[in-house]
Image 1 (cartoon, rainbow over the protein chains, first blue to last red):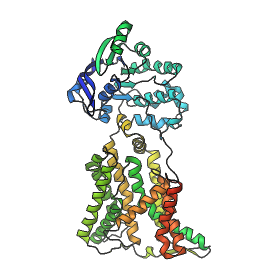
Image 2: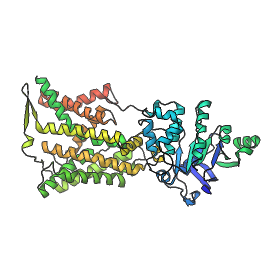
Image 3: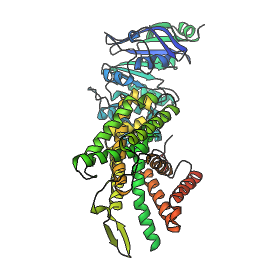
Length: 232
Length: 288
């Protein structure tokens, strides 16, 4: 069943157009990667879906309902959660307070503090620490946990692996199957193509704000991706 | 012993300055709103209490039962209906709009109440005093005001660090955009923040008006004192604001002991010294 659909989605930063008529479909419980070079519009796509950018009403549909242009906090209530690029934990809150804040919307579901600590046991020991004292990987875990606390149906992850050591990235990606087991659809925006394709069933490749290629992740053709990625 | 007396009187005087400053500190800390109308809102609260006492026969402190909810509602409505629209266009729009509110309040009060100086009467408690060992005499009323300031700051501390709404306030103060992505309705929260700020503004206004005469143009001076307390203490730090108020009070008491004409000036000089030595205040909030 289709959970998210964008129809001819265009997005702007002031006068600058960052997305040009992008059509993306994501099914319930599905994991999808969005890849592309710097400035291709990946983050813009996520932010448009999450309500952080003004877009037209019908250009984004969630669960069959047009949601384009609704405020971000409204969309959290509907079940769209975001792990922002660079983690963006709240620096004056402890780890546990950051997680609790993620549950501000009080959406019912499978995730709660205990389950987050089961998923990322290291966070339990660090729960009373101020968020900025954590390592990058630990912060990323807290940011994922914070988003899960709203019990999302759609989890938007922006550059999970950015700036992290490979061994830490592996740990973080190991949590994705657990998240998928709750029928949560996951969108991964990544520059690390191999990592993203391993963890997803389909991918979209963006180039300069336009959709260039979409395919099943396991059938990917490296030459085709390279062409779409760099616009060759 | 004389200096101990000056120190104690100064601390107690600082209580009212801290109360002036709490509302300002809150609205700046949470939404970076520099509320130029803050002093006039203090005076508006005093007039509200004046009307309530005249109409109902309540004493000024009991009138807070009515004045506090009214000012809370006013703060909520002004933020929701007006100030929220000024927060996206940089620093200038909220300054201009609150400056306008300041002028409207001052002239509105002048229109309705005239330029007469007023005072709220609380009765015997105003002049009661306690004798401490060593011949130090402490006014009961200033002591009450100081305790109210302490309790106010303490209760805000509990609100911020022990409740979900306080957590949300801190998160929005850290990073409003991300807070919105986590499901917080910033505009509603901002309205609540100014509402809460106005609770303390109302308390400050009424307690102030019991011990000092006021008229429609009394606001801007309270605004300056509040600003000084907030900046001395460090922006966004509520305990710092209390310390800032006390430092102002003590400086004024020391100034007054040297020469009565030095009282007000000594407070401003202390503020300037702090500004030069520690431009971000004595206890700036540790973040970034």
